[in-house]
Length: 271
Ligand code: HPA
Image 1 (cartoon, rainbow, N blue to C red):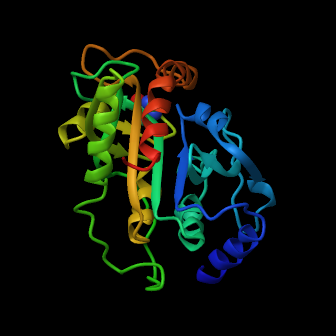
Image 2 (cartoon, helix red, strand yellow):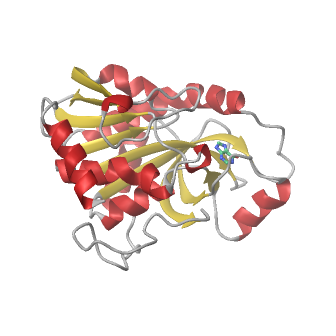
Image 3 (cartoon, protein in one colour):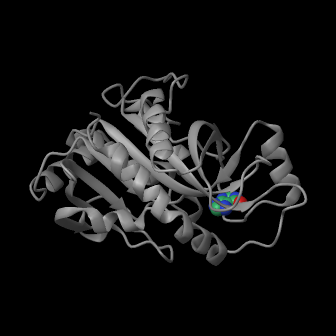
């Protein structure tokens, strides 16, 4: 795997216009941020050696190198979900490549179902911690110590520094943000009422089908991580209604400007 990662990184390095230390996974609700990127070089996933190819509706797969304000960044437009059939190694491969390219900080967004009964649809939740409920672990297998340690610490997974800054930015912009624990589960089914109750009972504030694998690998690789969810539906007793992918996308669109504001400012150097 180490050789594959480095082959891919070498190929990308020959095509990238800058040397970013910041990577962004443009998950649900961050699509618009791509429009703010200047001096773009786009690399479709299907052209990148060893990269999986994204298939899900509403996600086009490419890396976008460029600038966000004054900061060099690389963005993933479209991510690889476990429910699509990718292995955990495939889902997290881009993170390994980012590390090899010199990335130091990873920003992630996603859509999630709210479990906390104080949450409303369309609100944002800064992820303070997670529960890994995926059936397969991205680090299972022989550990390559060039990539990270065998038993990574997870006590400080979501950067306290970036969470504090994000809350300050939200306050300045009159954006309500919640903070909480994200449960990552495989999907593709949304939860039954009993499953929503269970995820709440084990300590979750929101549940979704992504992020946890990428974050685990990012921490294994020593990257600083910030992640934020849009609450697109509620798995709260008494408030559970039928939910579809379209409902999720619709709620995410409404919250998108708030999410974009926070991310855009957070990625700029602190003054
Ligand atoms: N459950 C799981 N994933 C989700 C949900 C949900 O309710 N909403 C958006 N992604």
